[in-house]
Image (spheres, each protein chain N blue to C red):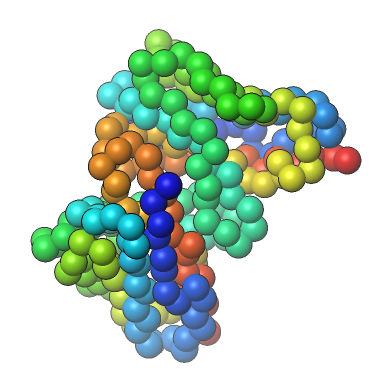
Length: 114
Length: 111
C-alpha cells in the first residue's frame, strides 16, 4: 500500500495557539489529500479535501478559517489548526488519493489542547 | 450525500466463533466498499474491500458480501482469534471520491 507519514504524531498545546500538522506521501505523488478528524470513540469524519495547487474544499460545519489546509506540492499537505481550543482536541488523519479506489491513512496526529 | 449505518455498535464473540458486522448505505451511486480495522491509538488499516461489480470476496478468515439491490454489505470473520479484537469501520464511496464511514463496531473476542 501507499506509504504516508504524518508529523507530529502527537502534540499538546495551550488554548489559543496554532498547530501545524504535516502529511507526506513518500512513494507516490498525491494530487488530492483527504483530511479526517476522529474524536474519542467516534468514527472518522471528513474535514476537507485538498488538491495540489488549489484551494481546499471543506465539509459542511468545518470552519475554513480555523483549519487552514495547504497542498503546495504533490508530496506534502499541511493542516494548521489556528487558535486551538480544547474542543479541537482530536485525532487528525490524512489520506492521499492514490489514483485507485483504495485509500490508505497516515499514522495520525493526536492533538490535545489544554 | 452518502449515509452509512453500521450495526452492531459492540459485539462480543467467543474465540473460534464467527463474527458478522452489517452496514447499509443510501447512495446508489456508491461503488466501492472497504472495511477498516482500527486498534487503540492507531490508524485505520484496510482489511478487505469490495467493488460493486462483485457480490462476495474472501481473504482467508475474512469475507465481505455485497447486496446492491438492498444497499447493504457485511463483514464476516470466521474462526475468531484474540487479535481480532478491535474497532471495525465500514465505508462507502464512489470511485476516487471521499469515503463515508459507518459508526464503527467494537469487537471483543472472549478467550
